[in-house]
Image (cartoon, rainbow, N blue to C red; front, side):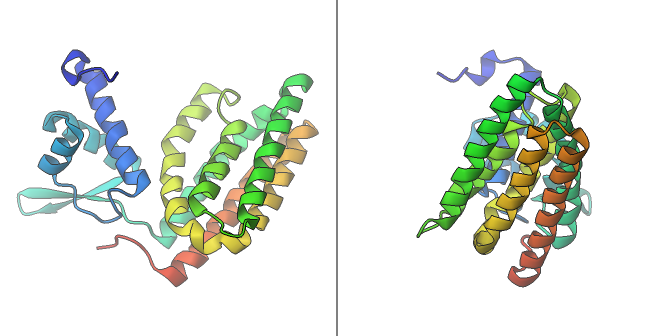
Length: 236
């Protein structure tokens, strides 16, 4: 049963508001470029406007929303999805995940073998979903997210995980909206995942880091190309 808002400490309420609004943005229920009307969002989520304002400040710092001045007022909108942003963002995610992959490659042999088995299974499921007669882009996104989590969470150092938690949801926004246009190229990502698996299996931290960075850099280039054809979302 959810804890009533009034029984939660103020700082926790602000953090809860941040998570709720971020989920709306990542899922697309608050679309790129959409204005955020504080009264409407607060009422929808059942939170106080003071907590929402604090959440919006954090979301702006994290890159999920933008604020522009209009006279003495300010207007907050969901951050747009652009070609310039996606390459920078994916490169950053690749750099952070590369450090996680180094940690995975350094695991003791028994635990590394367990991780490799899980990665291999997840990648096989991803390929099978992409080859299905009616490929489901939402399912493919979920499988791709699950693959990357396997060598990040509970493996990477705490600071790396914290950076990943801040950056990865922003990348998820692009994947949820544009992956459908890249379904025919999922096999490229699967092959890049195979390189990550092989490097972790061999216990080679340098190769694991390079393979992850390559995967994200190539993914960024693929998304830049798709966005150029399909159009940016939410630019005002």
